[in-house]
Amino acid sequence: MKPEDDGRRAGAVFGIFLRLGLTSFGGPVAHLGYFREEFVVRRRWLDERAYADLVALCQFLPGPASSQVGFALGLLRAGRAGALAAWAGFTLPSTLALIALALGLAHAGPTLPAGLLQGLKIAAVAVVAQAVWGMGRTLCQGAVRATLMTASAATVLLLPGTASQLAVIGVAGALGAWRLRPGPSAATPAGAPNAAAAGTWTGAGASGPAGLAPGEIVSPLSRREGLAWLGLFVLLLAALPLAAAALAQPALAQADAFYRAGALVFGGGHVVLPLLQAEVVPTGWVREDLFLAGYGAAQAVPGPLFTFAAFLGASMSTGAGGWAGGLLCLVAVFLPGLLLVAGALPFWAGLRRRAHAQAVLAGVNAAVVGLLLAALYDPVWTAAIHGPRDFALALTALLALNAWKLPPWAAVLGCGLAGVVLGG
Image (cartoon, rainbow, N blue to C red; front, side):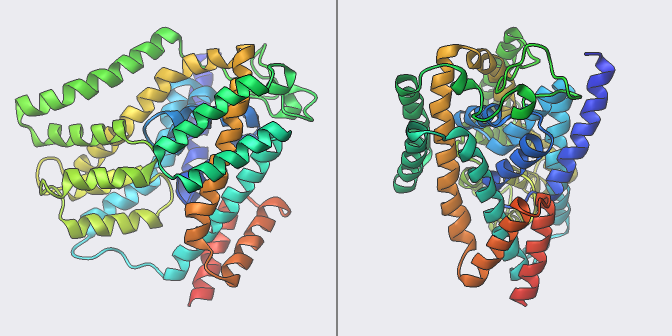
């Protein structure tokens, strides 16, 4: 592929992810549903199995899972430039909104109509339900896979927490190696007679890279480069606190605090919030009322919740603040997760091609669907559906997505407007 081809693709990737960044409400689980609809169903950049593999990889790694999946999709589509374009496009809208809010906020958080927020939550129910149904039909066929999916969902609902999720994925992989024999069924979605029908990675046009089988992804990064990115992750994790202590620069201390938060948190945006609170409020960097106001605003904007770091950085009264502080803290909290994806993907892609590993991944993929199913109930359903009217609106949104084939952003807009009307 010529370098200029990567440049053109990166521009297209940025535009696609910018639109997603403007319309992807509902948190990380809903984001995975938006991504699946856009890149698996609509654009057919990769098939269900390859997409589930990316989700499984990012579930294993600390950091913001949905942003990591988007970063990986951009990397696979248009190389390093595409990875940065995907992250920037998906992150930019909420970053700009939250920094602008931080600069203009005086004593209280923004006031949005309660019906609008409720409508956006209901839209997330429909998006996640569509993703679970579509992935389940492809990845959970047969008694063993269906059982793994159901058991995984039940386990994480009864035993919530990151440790439970990681354990479920590990056990499902082991059971997959035991009960799901490697073979064509482990690599090719049932009912897909060829790569095109399966939605295999297609690159720029209808003919994808030579030799790709359904479900196969090939990282543009070498294993040596992957090791370099992993080494940089470890180096920054060790060096930033030393540099902050030695130089006594507030900006370095802030970068260290946000990098550690992004490097050590599993479970997505909501889990990182208490870590950030412990870093910025007791130190006096951000007042508690501003922290709570920003947290409320972060729930109302589309895109990744990790962009809350931009609000905090812009709100800081010492060290870097304003636009510079917002961007510094934003990059610091995202960087470790993105470095880990870039470092792990070359090894994950190689593992994916091994026949025996396909059985393990078949079990893991079923567990991933189970985790999404559990998340569909809690927190997505429990936070959004409070009565028959909410349920009716969610059903209508699901009908619009599945039967009317409306794009997710249209369903989100419609639910938001309906929420304002019904809640007024």
